[in-house]
Length: 432
Image (tube, rainbow, N blue to C red; front, side, top):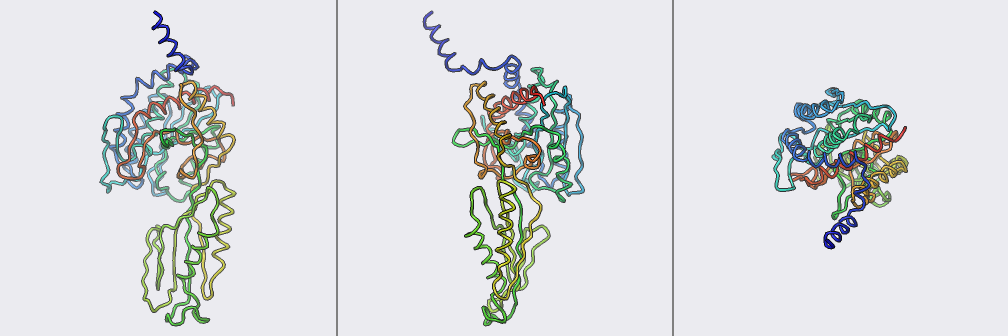
């Protein structure tokens, strides 16, 4: 009898937070556990259907797999065709609640970086780990969304919740023009009070992190021009330094002068000669030249990633100033293309992480620290960050995103579904 009492006391001391779950929340946790095999089978179906961003029929097919899941939960669904931007489209699912609680937007994406030409095409499971194209980025995130919503329905907490889900079809390679490709997402951000993004969970050394910020991603192209002629005249008053020296000056000035926290500026492709041209996609530079000819053209293309709009504007201005300081006999221009805005670490975002950590406490889980935004890429959540409080990285855990061998920790799907479902339940009960 004494041993039994001691064992019971030890169990209670080991799991004090479990008692903080309300009865509906406990039903959510139980529903998630019961639903895990179904969620993994659903994930396998999605992964085995190729949906590379440029495989428009494939993206359509994944949407057809996902759409009935939302409709079975009482969501109204619609497909926004995006052929005008060169991409498939976006799936939007709307659940109308009682109109009193927080409006919640859930964000994920249907496409992957793996086109049909990739040899990496199939879901393969080995115990609690599975590999496959897009298995965590972002089909694992979609599995978490559906599982969380199914658990809310089973627990009776979905009926009053105002929730819209948007699954874009071009997150990995955005269609153009951007103002059309992201119009619907931006409008939903204006509707929402809160946005929860289901890109992969940030997990480092066994610690789960909350993402309250993401950096921007904007491409730039520099074109340098010089006077061409015999190389014996290089550096002289007539020919000057040539286009390649001018481009090297600019890039090395970037390296030396632009560095600051949370900023990166990569050079992805470079070429120069007489002549040199870049293709319409900005991916390939064709150039030719001889050692005894001063080059007339040099081109480089890269990106900048910043944490706030203010940082982005400041860095662009500094880049433009450097480009304008030309070597003799040369000229240069820099052009910035459309890109992903930043998602700064606002107090509203941090308040959402505090709410999530209250859920963690109720589940008997450790608190999740803030993740370093310099370690994350850009994502669709940034397009709504100006209008709603945002918490990112609520999808599944794994590694090797965007590479063959991408894998998922299957145990993270129910874990993240519990976190998300309980968080959404609590938020839906907070008055607007």
